[in-house]
Image (cartoon, rainbow, N blue to C red; front, side, top):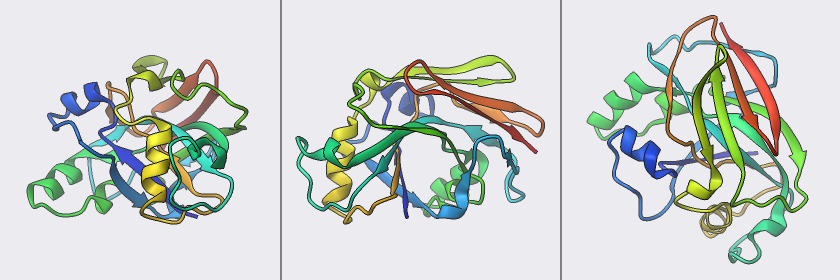
Length: 202
């Protein structure tokens, strides 16, 4: 099982971090040790200081596939839900300044909390709401209609580079409003269509 993540997939989020808009999906991969089950504590990483939340729609792949067309992309989706791509922003900025890979900032243990996953039954992938609250305060509020690359485009793009496998997860990018977390914070991801999940930072 791989965790594929898409960066800079909402224009407003790219703008808030002063990044150029991508012309193709920005892809990075995380190991399975990044996952955190619903309700489990998220351990603050020891190798950085500025931990940011990035709430995302998550897709689970249900069967092996390669070289999918846009029209066939949804046929491999088994489940859909919410998750968080945690980022050590100070570490990421240092790595970017040195033109180094982002793994230390993105792919550390506990960096991918995964919410409840629902069976995919034809939900409108171009109209899914997602929000993020920290200690009850609304931080992020977006919709997949704002994506630069649709879910179908992401799946097709990935499948033309890697053979997708059953159980693979795809974190599809985050809307604007990302911000810092500290120990003791309660973080919630919420969607009218996909439910709600929460974690505590320790």
